[in-house]
Length: 303
Image (cartoon, rainbow, N blue to C red; front, side, top):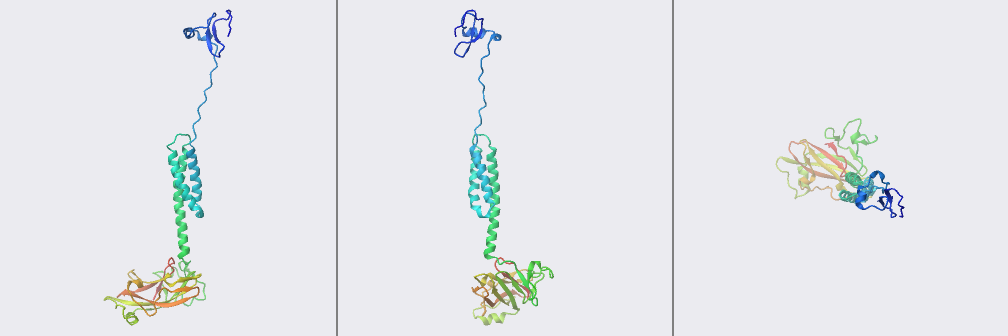
């Protein structure tokens, strides 16, 4: 900058864009500038300072998204496997994101919460699916009963019997000859022999006699398979329940009868009639308990 001597003292641009003190004759030294009156200073441009934006915590964002997607899949029975893969992944990502620098760490907390809650829901859904699958595989539908003389009446569910509440329970057992049915099996208890010692002894020479204080009772019943394809007679379970509340099954004593049930396979419509022997303590009355399938409702018959 070429400045004439007539220029009064003050702060001016020295030509380089920097403000310096002009004493009226020449540019001032650093000491002159320190002692220069501030009132005569021509304001220099001040660079604006912008705030530095915070870095986004990308991992926290990813964990929240993965957890949300996994949560949704965990609620869908047919897509549980996807949820089981995404939720643990989201859990790990969210934990790591909380230790990283960056804004919006709350997304990591969201991912953590969703991954935990989603896992709990996934377990519940999986348990429900598993229970339904087991019931489909081994269940036999709703159990219905028809008492003798009621063959023309529509069979009603045993647990919803309106004319005879709770018919078929221990407190209100059904009579002999009642038909117990579901979608796979029909069972009819034909007879009960409270003194079966002679029958057991004559059936097989290797049968052991009843120990002192007990005796054999024989239950004869008929099973009919009504399901699809085929199944085995062992699915139908018949036991004796004593008045003291003890359950006795045919496996409690190794007795072979002439008309024993074995691992018989039946196709739809096939039927078998046989007997089982139960070792009962003397002085105890028994009820016959029938379950037409592994997961079927139990029904009690009074001999």
